[in-house]
Length: 143
Figure 1 (cartoon, rainbow, N blue to C red):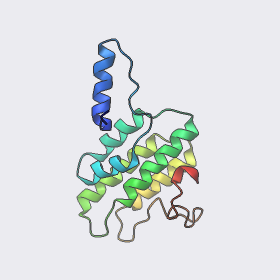
Figure 2: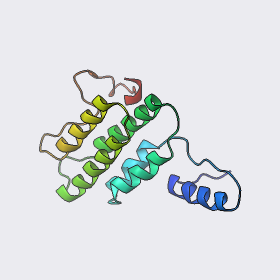
Figure 3: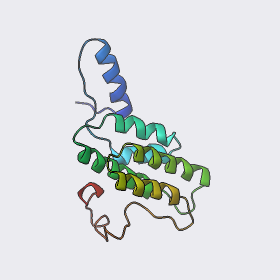
Figure 4: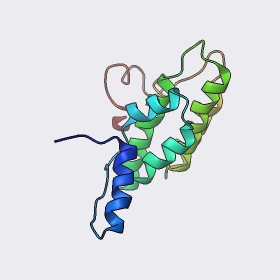
């Protein structure tokens, strides 16, 4: 058995659908790989949009998966990171906000994106309502 990256799985899905086969591709975004790609300098908004386009489930389930992506991207920002690279990550967070169905959550994510590259930035993992749960290994989608 072999594993495909989400990007290759998406390409394979297109190729298979053209051939008359059905392949759904990855069922959920992999927050870690999204954050890694963004941090490596790939256009983060594009990566996020590609990953989120494959999400399935109820709006609440999708919102939870998107929250996990936002947390992963936010945590990948380094304090001394070059501003241009940090803005790329912030654009990815903004792209994630567009996929959220809950307006309050969308507004919180947009706020995170705006503050992400500030000197004392706020990450999605630290919020008054969440306390230390994110640091204790509880994914954002469970909060």
